[in-house]
Image (cartoon, rainbow, N blue to C red; front, top):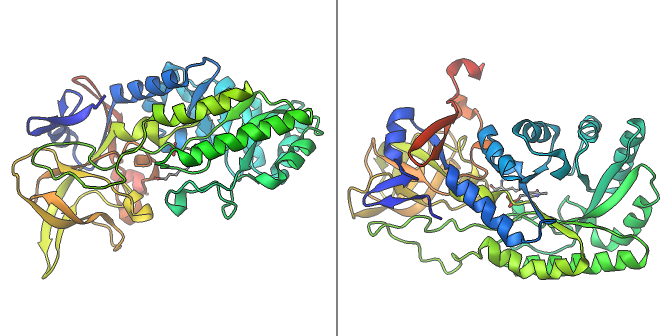
Length: 422
Ligand code: LLP
């Protein structure tokens, strides 16, 4: 299922050489493979098996309208965290009946909008939020379906900035209070208690934290039943990691020798937790973002210049941290490769952007194929948390986005124009 790969010495997205796209549409440029997105969704959906189970795409990973439409057409549900994301989801055709609303700080107007759209459920983060949702539901003369997001205090073993299942983080209701808060929520007449929600973090690369979470949830659902509270729905969250190293292979490109590089497949993650969760008889929904879309995208950038200091070489490219912030924010690794292989020589370099910050880098001390000004590079595995986190910092225009389907190419977001900076 690798739709972005080398054919001889040319990097292709499906049937289209990426160098042709760089020439035609300019750089920096996000390019996505339509078939990779669809196949990855189907792969997840098949791995879930039972038709009551559901994949709810976490819009925060990539909210381009045309990509959302692809997933909505496939029948995916939506995981949203703001009125804005709900608006985008509905506009793209996601059904409110399979939409869940998460997030630690929902405003009253956002709750009211979601209630009026009749979404499936709110994932509630605190007792005070229970009160707010209950009040808004009363005011609107309706009932709100809710799940409680429980923080199980399980370490996702990911980057601390994207770890959300520990008590030291702001997320969810602490596990020790879960029974008490469920009992209280059951007394609020404008709420309908449907389920339980967890999301312990992102880019999780081991099955163990997920297994611990599944065991916790199963135990909780059982204990609640003993108290007369019968849940029908488990929202297991997202967080399934993807493999960033060695995303593409070519004999001219040095492969990373990273012992932690093998990440379980979605089928392996789900295979480890579904049998546990299914013992509850509940419908199981998951909220993957990254693992649905990361592999389907690349960021194309052009080398502006190569600069040598006494003991360092910098490859200065025309994309910056304003286009892709993951390396700056999480010291995240993305493989960087040439669009056309013209040499088997490599050298140790820093790949940096044009922004006036020392954190504006894509790779440090990395062995990269020898490159010159004017060459184009692909920053791999950037379909998720790429464009959505882009900004106009330093007066830089947001890049264009392109969707490739076989040999067909479509602009799904034009490059921002100077006039739009005002
Ligand atoms: N559900 C909830 C409640 C979430 O907070 C998130 C992500 C997801 C689902 C989707 O998680 P995923 O399957 O994509 O791991 N900007 C960071 C990632 C932040 C994730 C925030 N929450 C990055 O670039 O690594």
